[in-house]
Length: 332
Image (cartoon, rainbow, N blue to C red; front, top):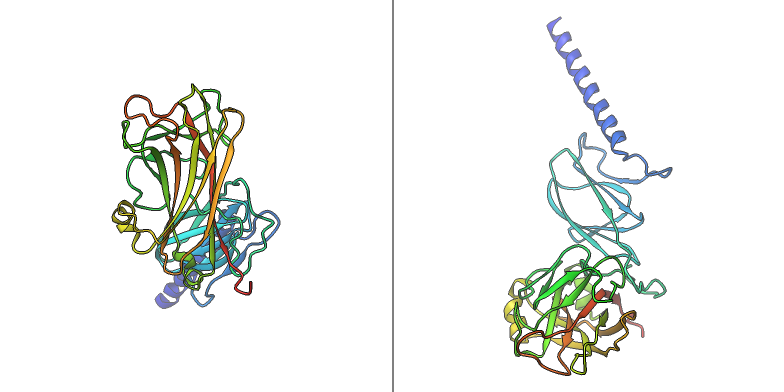
């Protein structure tokens, strides 16, 4: 009788556990999204798998976990317990990166809002990996955070000379969203002798390394600039510059400071004084086979008057920056 009671309690416990699991998934909304079921990819032999559920708005984004493609959102799939790097990307929207930590036997939800980016290259027909129109930059419209006054040393942030994320001011409205970046001076916090102010972001190529090593990747960069005019000495020139580097991103300070780049391409523009007009500068290049990462520089030049004291820039701004990686057709 004791054995029967124990067995009955054991069966009841399993039944309750399974019921709770089913209810938990139903509560999470993981059986369907709207009227459409999401795809499921896991080992059915495991009673309690460790899973990641990814949903994006809009749906249909490519899911990459630790460099491996796992389908499109929304999707529930099995992963190993621990920490993972999640990337979602969709043509016409900025890519999102998120680090997720999942405990064994649990389901982790990752709900990501994608931001539409300007000048989406949806009409481009690219061969190979489906990366058309995906902006590789974080915070491309300066809506999500500041620019840090230091050498670029990691991906996902803007850094460089003194600058400030601002809202509309001095008669200039951000090209999109509510914020833009203002160039303030040519050093970390005060006027300097350098005739240019720059902010930069690093782009890691590790998720495209096979195509890079085959020489099959092209990079395009663009940015929109605007400025005021306070007199004849107001500077007019901006640039967007691409650099390709070999080596570790962690060693970028030495590489950057000593100009150890493999290839550089620059796109300058001389701007007018129309406050309502944002003007686009762009450049592109084929990524060298041995490159490991890229840097995009946004630069305001002191091309009219190089001020070494006082105010260096009268009101110079950048917004809506994009960097896209595209596959080169080897048959051409």
